Length: 432
Image 1 (cartoon, rainbow, N blue to C red):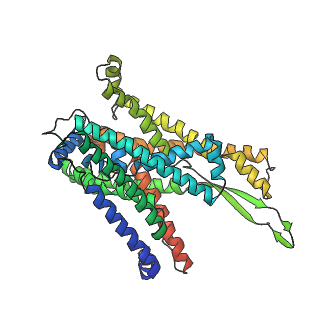
Image 2 (image 1 turned 180 degrees about the vertical axis):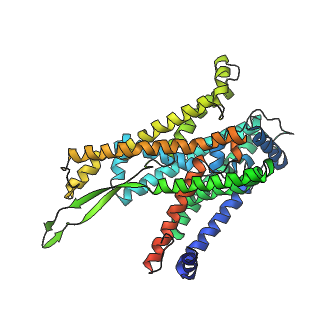
Image 3 (image 1 turned 60 degrees about the vertical axis):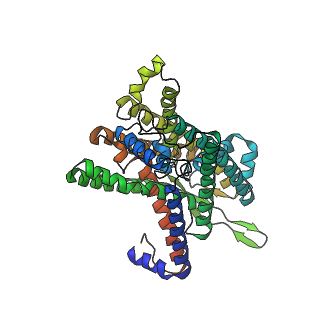
């Protein structure tokens, strides 16, 4: 692998792409630590540290996708989360809105139009999220239950707050631009690489926090367990069921087409990390309700069950992930459409009749392999909560949940991108 990496740097155009990607990552990290105007950096740092120690921060998922920039109220505080949310919303709307479904089937032109809609929706979501975060910072509710040493904002007037929101929204648009630059001029998968960068950026501080709060033996155990988890995640992420497909020969004019064999790859984890995001967002609603109506008695009774180390919270979270995994796979993979396309181009699964029997067979196989994939997602997501019960701080456990899935998934995709370019030049790839 190191030899292949050296060969990649010796290839001029590939070296240029890698260096350009690294430069974009550097620019991205600079924006993540650049504070927004009107922020008292010293007070914000003290309050954020107190929130981490008391485990009262309720914005773990958003802060994860911002690489810790949210708790710093930096220019890139919103991170990539508005874009992810917009992409998920457009993907779900494609199933229920005929116009979007038609655009999806138009090829490159339709995809470009959907991408444009995603950008507009990202800006709208960034305005909402930025306004909410700045408003909560001005009222002292950003770090619920933590008493700071002063006001986080210097001026709570309407114009300074509007300026902060504009800076955060502009930061989100710049992140989208950086991601597209990495996709066009870098190694590809621009948005995924930026998400990977944000997740990995908090790893050193998490390792250091474990080393300081615990002894060296616990730190070593955490690293070994993390490597074992990573190996298991790599194994499952690469696992797939290959459905063989045979295409019959047919004459088009004077040429013979078809007669080839291929396969349909059905991944065990067909849904990715989307079910975890859905489940986390849904479980956040009761927490948000306790903030809006702190005097409600029924919310006070429910609040103990919302803690991450509570057994009922883990069970409900696991059940939500199972449900959303089946839900997301059902709306993103249409066996009937796949079967119709195969029949249209003369393809068939050996031993299965084309048309409806093929759709039923694909649905049967997909349902069976989704079960272990859903259980796998649920178990990986529970790792930080179990770490909270054992180590006492899930915030300082880097291997688990959404973070490890992002690191492994994006890492494998990026390696495959570089490997494919090396193979075009008759070089041995990373994974050989």
